[in-house]
Structure formats: structure tokens, C-alpha cells
Length: 555
Image (cartoon, rainbow, N blue to C red; front, side, top):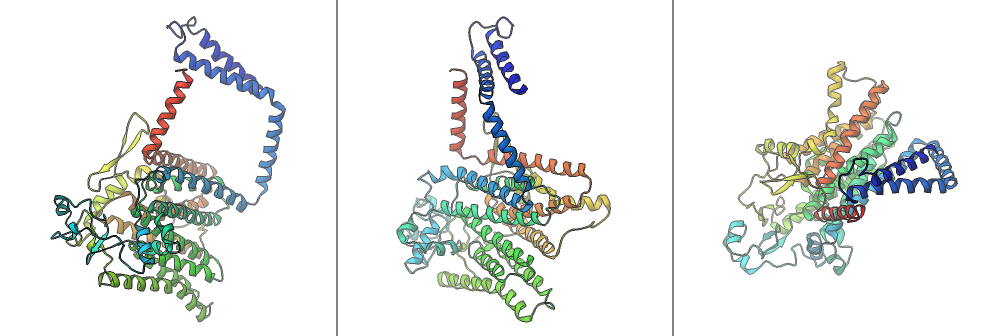
């Protein structure tokens, strides 16, 4: 109750300051200006709050008592149950934030990218090429793949951008899996499904799979790692990755990357949880293989990491061949490889039927800024040095007005980017084992990892290096491509952090460990959230701030 009285006294103090500001020498102006009014309002709010607290004292005491009982009951729950509750609440919060970020895009009728729908309608019509027909002016050009020629010939607005043109027909070079899923709807329903909706669904699914993996890793280290930190890391993961940035204007480009990662990470989750079971759950292995097969059929650039994961999984299964029957080993391996082989065979047929070549996905015939019929080396180690700067060190601008942080446009790709060292600096916790080894001289110390966890960290770290090499080797830097390796970066970082925290015996060092990460995580959440804000949200927030200021100052 003393705090309530203190609050009331402070309220009276502020009101008195406003009334006698001129006599106290706090305000030389005659009359009530905005500052005096603002101080008086603060005092009035504090005084009103104190009076309400005194008036409803019994109800508040009862509420406090009920909350204490609820807190006590919650603390009595099993750690796994409490972790599930925290995880669920965090997942709902992050997905709601995703929706808030993508809402301006949903409400914008001009964002009509519907390439997956176009392909699905073509499939339902029994054909592989799109129903859209190339303009005669485009077909009349001597080289329709030359962007400069298209511009000077005034046909730049008469073609389907980034589609593939082959034998006077339009095709898509993006993987066909999402369009195949859409064929379960009728043509009228498909026509309403834009790529932005597909992107949002994939982003939510990807975050949920990442959440499940993080939750499973935590369960292996729950002897020490606090439950609140699990929730905080998930919040940091969802709001520090480029997911919110991709929600600003999701098109088929973003949908393909999100879809590929959704099924790739999903496959990793099902395989890992299967190998954790002593009997190697066959259903989960099949789900893992199917997920990886679909990931290939969405985004082909994931194939090096997926093939590595598949080989690593089979090798892990074979390590127990003496304890398992040959039939079970063969079945487990087949559940991984058969879906992948079917996917590869299907893509090969798909390419042959469209472009008369098993290995041609349509990139060579793409109507883009670059002429891929002549530019035959989009992947090269020459680009690694420049892309290290683009993805890790690219700067941002600090300005005096909201949102204060602004991404800088990349001159080459015309896209605004910010380096990972600024947006996700906590990811470099991944190097803690190296510092520990250098400091202690010990390679390991009471390492708690078991074979499934050894498999997971090996697959995560190696796949991270593979995807990082692939993306850095591609000539075109863009924010969405960073997702291909950042998902692995995040999960690997959490695994390393969990393991290292488990090895720390000094309580003070543990506090420092979590405090340091928390500060970095808060910075990343704030920075990435402001950098990713859609223009409409910025305008709405500024308008709301002006309205509040006018209300407080009676202006």
C-alpha cells in the first residue's frame, strides 16, 4: 500500500509543479504551454491510478492472490510441459507478427504475382506451358532474351517478366511442387491464390519446423538451460532472420526460397526425431525423405545440402547394421532415397518434356535483366569475396527520424541489404567452442552429446558450409538468398550454445553467458524489426505518434 500512497504523492507533486511552474522559476512564459500541460497530465494520471488502486484494493488483492496460486501451480508442472507452453505462446506471437508485417501486402491489390497459380491452372488444363501467350512484338525480335533490345523496341511491358520463353511458349523455371499442391482446388479458386499467400504459409511453416527442432534440442539440455531462454531464442530467431523482411513484398521469388527451406528443415526435423528413437521410426524417416524430395522440386539449389543429408542419414543407419536386420536397414535407407530418386526422375522428365533436355530447367530461356543464353556462369568462386561483404558486412544508415535505421540499396542488385554482423551478431556464438579449446586446451569436457545429437550437429554444420558456399558463389546477392544458410546458422548456433552452457560449472559465468546473448538478441530484434517495417506501417506509426502528442498537449 505504501507504493500506492507514493504514487499519489508523486501525482500531486507533478500537478503542483505544473500549477506553480512560473513561481518556481520552471517556466518563464505566462500561461499554460504544452510542457506545463504535459507535466500536469502525468501528475493527473498518477493520481488517478493511485485513487483507483485504493478504491479497488480488495479486488486487486484477490487478483494478486489468484496470480500467485497460478504461478505456483505453473512452477509445479514438469519442465517439458512448461517448455511446451512457452514454445506455443512464442510461436503464436511470432506468427502474428509475421501477419502484421505482410498485411499491407495482402491489402495491396497491385501486388498480383500469381505464377504458381498460372502453372497450376496449366497443369489442370493438361499442359506444361502457361496459358498466357507471348506478344507478337516479343516474338518478332531478333533476340527476345536481350533486355536492351526489348527496351529499345518498346516491348518491355509486353512480356511475362522472368518467365522462360521456349518455342513461342511461356514456361516457369521455378520448381513445380507448389503448383502441383494447388491443383487440388478448382480453376476459379486457384486464380485467387497469389504468390504472397503461398509465401506467408511457407514462412509460418518454416518457423514452426525451426521451433520444433529448437524445442527438441532444448530437451537434450534441459538440466541447465532455462526455459525462458528457449522462448527468447525462438523470438530472436523469428524476428532476426530475414523472414519479416521477406514479408514486405512476397512474390514467387520469396515463395520459392521459403518453400525450399520449409521442406528442407522439415525433412531434417523428421529424420532427426526418427534417429532419436531406438527403433528408428519408419514413418518419420519416410516423412523426412518426402520432405527433402519436395524441397528439391521447389528450389533446386538446395540439392547439394539435401544429398549430403541423405548420405549422412544412410551412413548413420548403417552404423547399427549388426544390431538391425538387413531387411530393416534396407527399408530405412530406401525410405530416404526412393522419394529423392523419384523427385529427381520426375524433374528430369519435366525438363525433357518442356525444353528437350533433362538438365535444362528454363534458366537459359529466362526473360530477365541478364541474358542467360550468353551468361553461362552464374555460379563462380569469383563472386565469393564480394558476397562475403554483401551478406555479412553491408552497412545500414542511421537517421534522426523514425524508423531510425534504414537499409542501404545494393547498387548491383538494386535491393536494400544489411550485413548479418549487424542484424544477427549473436550468431557468432557459434565460435565459442573454438575459444574454449584455445583457453582450456581441452577439446572436450564431459560432452553430453549422444549419437543422434552428434549426427545432428555434423549435418547442421556441414550443410551450413555447403549452402553458404552455394549462395556466396552466386553472382546475384539478395536478402532472400541469405535464408538458405541462415536457417542452418540459427539452429547450429542454438545447438552449440546449449552444449556450451551445459559445460559451464560457474553460476556467474552462466549468467554472463545468457546476459550477453540476451543483449545481442534484443539488439537484433529491434534493428531487424525497424529495418523490415513496411512503408504503410511506418506512416501509420508516425500518424499515431502525432495524434498522441496532440492529445497530450491539448493541441
